[in-house]
Structure formats: structure tokens, C-alpha cells
Amino acid sequence: MKTAMIGLGDIAEKAYLPVLAAQPALDLHLCTRNQARLDRLGDTYRIARRSTSVDEVIKAGVDVAFVHAATDAHPEIIEPLLNAGIHVYVDKPIAYTLAESERLVRLAEAAGRSLMVGFNRRHAPGYAELAAHPRHLVLMEKNRHNHPDLPRRAIFDDFIHVADTLRFLAPGPVTGRTIRTRVRDGLIEHIVLELSGDGFTTIGVMNRMSGASEETCEAMGDGAKRRVVNLGDIIDYTGGETLARRPDWVPVARQRGIEQICLDFLAAVRDGRRVAATDALATHALCEEIVSAAGAA
Picture (spheres, one colour):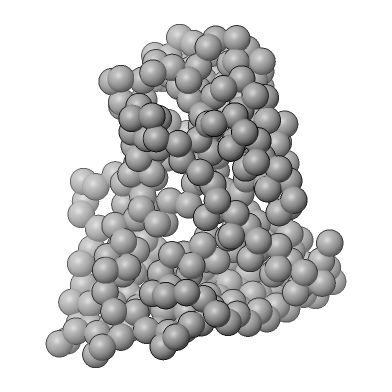
């Protein structure tokens, strides 16, 4: 399967490229405007097919594209790929606005092509285990060390993982939501999101003025409690306190669910199953609501 990686930033290099380069059935094609990075990674992984533009990727006749470029560039990359009949996996978010995200999802549907959004936490082993346990109360924190940011960018590039994970772990239909934010001098400092339904509450917090960059998520219910720290260590409090650390030889991409989501996407394309971004749009809509609550444009 001819597969392109478009955008070769840090996450693409550290997490996605090792996964895709290890797949024997892929004919990998690298694309970035940064010629030095293109040559370095192409040489490192012995990938001969290299391009500096999306047009070159399309002319190469690829079947699938993984888009890891900056969010601002997503629409101008995704649109021609879909129009060319190429299945697309894109790092979250699809775009910085709900309207633009909806337009691209409609385009994928019209083209009959897959558009998968990289919500890797749904595939991370620790969070998948939480989803299999009682969770009448879910608490998630994803904090940044002294890094206030523009509301739309912080919410769509970062907090979107919290919003989507709460939706994923909610054990039933969400019928209520509460949003609180702190914005000072035009920069967002913290966000608190509560999603609730019949007999459950999920709460997500991001403090961008925290003393540490960290991520934790815990689920409680029916006398049980389980906590995941930085998508690795799992603490089970049932009948005491048991710590299960990430095994030394488990790759970070697998622990964070990136390997699993990539392989799921590729399997769907091989099997002729179209992956729709309809559910992902609900997370984008929630993020747009949070942006509005923060008083941002």
C-alpha cells in the first residue's frame, strides 16, 4: 500500500514514523518542505520516495496519507488529498474551527474516502482498561507548566484530548455539561469541563499555569478506583494499592495508543471499510463551545 507521511515534526518523527516504517506491507513516501529534515529522516529509515509538496505526493499515486503538519495547514492539505481519492489520517484537530472541520468531513463523505482523526487515547491500553471498569465518576487532568495560550489554539490543539477522552469514558449518553474557564490578558490559564448523564459525572481539568506538565485520569465506581498516570503507570486501589508500571520494552507509541490507531486505520483501508469522522466532529463541536465560553473568537 502506497502510504505518505506529510509533515515530519517532532511527534511524527518520534511516534508515527517508527510505527509506519516498521510495517513491511507499506510503500512509504515522506513529504515535508524542510529539505534537511526530509533527507535526514529519509536516509535514517532508508526511504527513497521523498517530496516537498502535496502535489508531488498526489502525482506519486499514494493510497493513504498521514497528515502531521501544523493545524493551520490541515485544510489546504486534506482537501486536495480527498479530491484525489486518497484516504486520510490527520492529527487532531481536523481544523481550528468547527465549520471548516464539518466541510472537510462532508468532502470525505462525498468522495467515499476515510477520514480518521488521531484521538490516540481511545486506543491507549491504560485508558482502554478504564473503559472496561465501573466509572460513575471520571476525573482527568492534563496540565502544562506555566504556558498560557490563545484560547482557540490551546483548546483545539491540546484540551481537545481531554474533551474527547471524557466523551469516550462517559458510560452513557451525556445530557448535561458545564464549562468554566479563566482567561487573563487574552490568554487562557485554565479550563474545567464537566459532562454528566444518568448516574455519572466526568470532569476534565487543564491548568496551563501549573507547576508541572502532567496527565492523569481516574475512574471510580462500585467500590473500585483505578488511576492512569501519564498514559503509563496504572494504580489500582481495589483492596489496597497496586502499581503496574509500563513495561521497560513496550514502545512509547504503543503505550500511548498511536501504534494501535495507525494499524486500525490501515486495516480499515485494506479491508475496504470507510472510517468516518462523524463522532470526531462531536468532540470538535464541544471544543467550539468551550472557545465560546472563554469569550474568544
